[in-house]
Length: 269
Image 1 (spheres, rainbow, N blue to C red):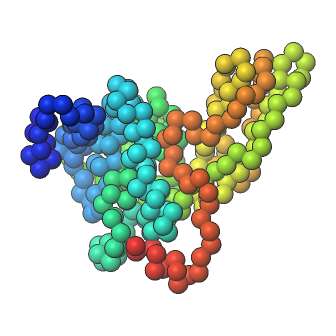
Image 2 (tube, helix red, strand yellow):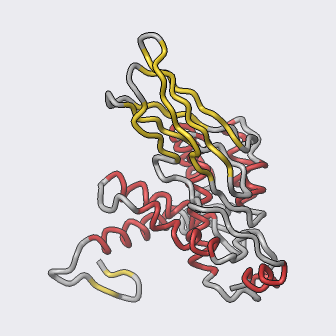
Image 3 (cartoon, one colour):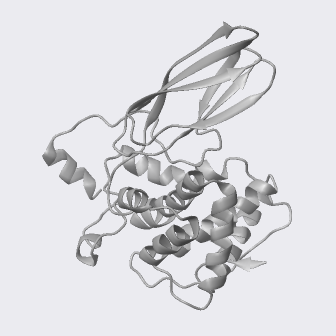
C-alpha cells in the first residue's frame, strides 16, 4: 500500500496506523470521490467518509477508541473557546488562526454525523446513509441537501439539529446528578437524574446497568434542562452511563463564563 505522501509500510511496523489510514482513505473513495461536496468549508464528505472509516475500525476491533479519537480535536477546540461554527463565510474563515481543518472540518464534521446517528438510531441512520450514497453518486451534496434528504427519509424535522450543530457554536455537556434504586414489590424502581450544563439541546442516551447484568437504555428529552429517567428491573441498579456508545462529542464540564473581549479573542485561536 502506498498512501499519504507516498509513505510505505515497513516490515515490523505496527499495522494499526495503516489499518486506520487505509480505511479512512477508502471511506473517501465513496464520500469525496463518488459523492462530491460543493461547499467551502466542505465538511459533509469528510464527516461521512470518517463515519465509514470509524464503523469499519470498530467492527473489526482495530481501535475501540476510534470515535473518541476523531472527536478529540473538536472537544479540545471547544475547551479553548474556539468558534467552531461550521457554516461561515469565506471572509470569516480567512481570519481563523487555530487548526480549522482538523478541529472543525474533520473532527466536528464527523461529530455531526455521529450525533445524527445517535438521534435517529442506527437502523434508520444506516438505511438513509446507504441510500444517500446511491442517490448522490456522481453528484454534489452540500449540508442543506443532506438535511433535506435525511428529513424526507426519516419523516422528521431536523432543523433544530442542523441549526445547533452547523450554524452555531453551541456545545454539548450533560451530567448524571443522581442515581438511586429502591425495591418495589418483587422488583426495583431506579431513578437517574440528568442535567443539561451546556448550551446545546440534544436527546442524550443513558444506559442503566443492573446487578444481574441486564441493561436498559433511555433517552432524555432535548427540551428539558433537568430530567429524571425511570427504570424498572428485577435487580438493583449498579451504574448509569451517559452516552454509552460515545457517539456524542461532549465536554465533561461546562465552560466557565469569560468576558466578551476574551471570548472574541479566543474564538479565532
